[in-house]
Image (tube, rainbow, N blue to C red; front, top):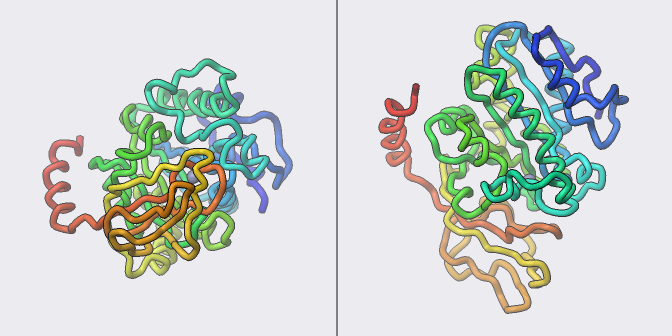
Length: 347
Ligand SMILES: [Zn+2]
């Protein structure tokens, strides 16, 4: 799978510093790990800046491949676009080794106490600072908040879903995707990247595309990029909207029969050396009942604390989240929340 050679379309004054940071020189097609800048498409018309991250976890290359496909299509068809789309590779040294991380999890060091860690503290801090420099420069060059999309995959199989902090603007973007939306991860997972940018006022959602290595995971993530770009206003009144429609259909077919919105209420923490082993056969959205035997560790069986949907069962070494348990959010509650938040936060 190659990377687009035509990385840039159109011109834009003031972006030379970004390009200097992103481009470490021309890279051959398909070189791995990819360059930091996976692609940039500037439509030549005013509009939002959307940044998509692939491979924040190094064993999740599907997001990088999905971005590569999107930039190939944009460059080939020269689609009209408002604003710009930028793709960034996350943890490049970990992508090179197909490991979730090398020294520490890049998606757990963005809490207020860690986000200004000294340079060189760990290899992931170096990656964090490179990403921050690029995103902060882009944010500083735009009058409007950025739209950020973070692409992930899971060790277990199952349908794709969207994860977000529950705010009005995030919700409007998530609603464009025909996928279940999970809220409440931020109550149980500390130091992820998107909450940092949410606190800075940007619109942020994450997609879990499916199992790390499956081809359909790349398809789903690609579709999600097109749909979110459409919802963010990048393709208004352009041929790109037709593509967005086709991708919407593809993603909707993969998500039939799943709940619309669910809230996470539980995270099972995994410590190094506690012998956590998930029982086989669980997927994202497997229904579980209270007390159900889900995993084993040295201290004994690990059971579901209550009934609900199992999310992200851990079937790989190197993670500290054993599994999550979520429950559906009623449609009535969602509508009431939207009607209250709309007038307050639409501005
Ligand atoms: Zn991930």
